[in-house]
Length: 186
Image 1 (cartoon, helix red, strand yellow):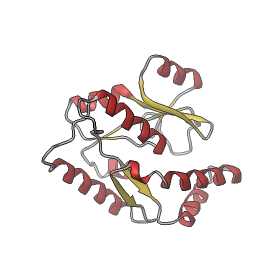
Image 2: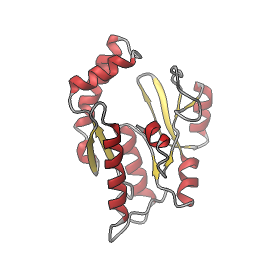
Image 3: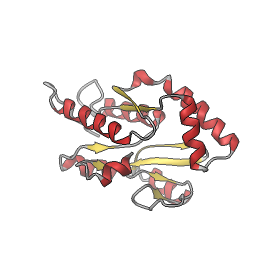
């Protein structure tokens, strides 16, 4: 989805997250992810360079703090792609860092129309073994239970990516019209 938004030249800053997982065919370092060794990722943790990080499916994933701060300082709308655990962590950080007791970011949950469709999508990728596929589906079921953590939910139907993008843009536009705008402070 983020790749499509970039191609459509939507005016957002898309945070590139870091990972220790292997690069898949067609992915570009610095565009899809920063593909790092375990040692490089650990160095980023040790130096406090990551806003949040976690080990997921045996690999580490993290959000570079500096990239968000630079974009926010320029007044850009920042889009960060994280899982439910990452969203919860970022919400906690924002509660501690800001002067307002409420989180000041907008959290959008992208949901598949059904578990069957999600399973089909994952199988089409051919990137998981059967055991890994079952684990991902179980995790998705658990993540759906975390919907109250989010501000919005968008159902992502196969072949209707531009609809999802339009909904995200509508949410951002609506948020900019708030009487009391959200301000993010890290």
